[in-house]
Length: 317
Image (cartoon, rainbow, N blue to C red; front, side):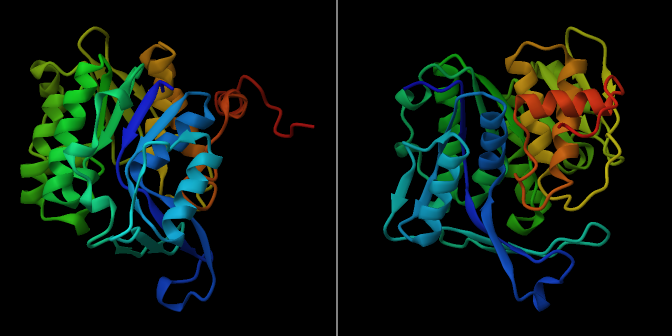
């Protein structure tokens, strides 16, 4: 069975504290799934794309919960590896729209960190048009780094477009380590979606310079939540964030990526890709967890109509 999109990376059990309560005082938690690549997979699946997730979980209740939720979201996990000797990673965090969010990772020695290049095969990429990776997976371990490089090789062999989001997490390593491990991946991608602060950390103070190295599409997410798309063949396109009340800002970047990449898969112009990306992100930040607000295609079209003023109807009866 082929998939239009293949993602590979870490998926963890998410324990989200009750809204507004600091992590250290929380008594009630909601269970969900977190992980940059699995979030993008869920978003693209809901938008109607066939998506395959490659990765590892432990042979434990957390791992079974992760795989069950991926399947429920329409993501193919048939190639997922269950490791009887390593646990599934766990992420605990709180949720505050108006102050810093505390995140605690329990991922050292996790099954995901044991990803190996030997576990990736060309048949897993049959029919893939897009392979999406982030900088998180290669930072988990040396073997996961090698697996990410192998992933790029297999994507090329399958004729797929490679999209890359640095997704920098400072708890995974120092800036120097991110530059050493993740910086070179910018040269292996066809599409890069990155925050301007991430590009600066990776040693790219002038983002447009990446287009001179062969990159086809660069999306820069600015500090004011707007985004600019640069390509070698079209004028730069800018998209402000849609103003919405924020319930939980975590997951906005992955939602943005899902919306933009869906547009690319539909051969939309860069302006439409950016509008879709901004709309999906706006929907996700209004809900708890990383994926609750991910829309289906009908929901995205309705949101775009409302955000752009082409349809003032706010209640679907």
